[in-house]
Length: 394
Image 1 (tube, one colour):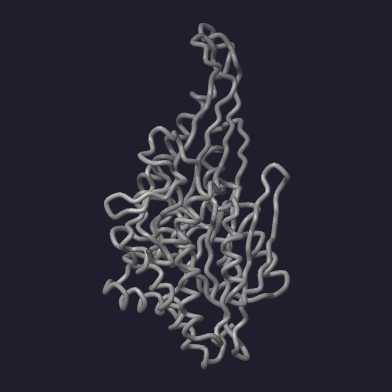
Image 2 (spheres, rainbow, N blue to C red):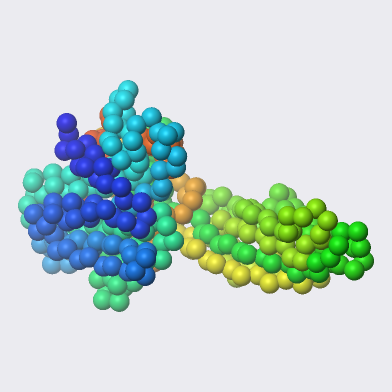
């Protein structure tokens, strides 16, 4: 059994549902500590939702050493109905060339590959110029307010630089390395409450139905989404998308006009839009229809983009040399903790396993792709180490 597979199984066996790390970071810290990493545990959050974060650093020997950080999360989503799993979700199991278990794909195998890649690199080059780091949180699948963002804020406060970062999110589509994310769209949610007057359904003149009042405005917002769009996107990003996720109204009785209607919606937006511009357009539509409403906004993350450069090129070359694949750059999909890291690091990409089974019952990864992923990470470290004789652009 490969060392990467062994470590992946060890991590999968820990039931680390958000925010419980379940001892995963201790396992990682013990291995990194033996390699000379300085370990820092940063806890955050209330007592009933305590998040554990690990920041591990091994300074390079160069006079102005760049820092390459690997980032990921040890927490996993809940298992769902246990009876629907073919094998227990926290018992690593092999079937048909696949490793099954919660976190096998998202993203404990990536973390195992990070660590073993670092071990192999340091075995061959014990005193590299490059500074190596690992950032791991137990709050990526949850609210995300006490995890990676807390570590990034701490690094920014003490001016500790990160020059490159690889986030191990599962980005591949059909084969390991066929797609990497060099950016992500922003995310912004809104909770709209339209006020009406509750009353008997047989006496509508004595009530005011908020659903009826909202319907024309909602149709206009849907029309913007379906027709011209909120923006046209650009060469790197799809056009901004707006979607309703929940609609609540009524008391449950069939003879009562509701007193309010609540709509939850979300924007996934490109760099062609800003939170302010999108908010202004939504308020413009609602105001034009004369609605009595309140609207609470939550900006979950801003869009970011890493243009082709040292990190992207190093990863592309590593993937090509290991797999023969010419990888695709993409900004599609949801958000990740890369949105926080991009605020303190100019070059951030996401690279990990095939994502077809993430968050599903019987989550799995092909065993044959585990060591190639580790090798891609190691080859990337080697390429960035080779750049350490050049001046540091910051």
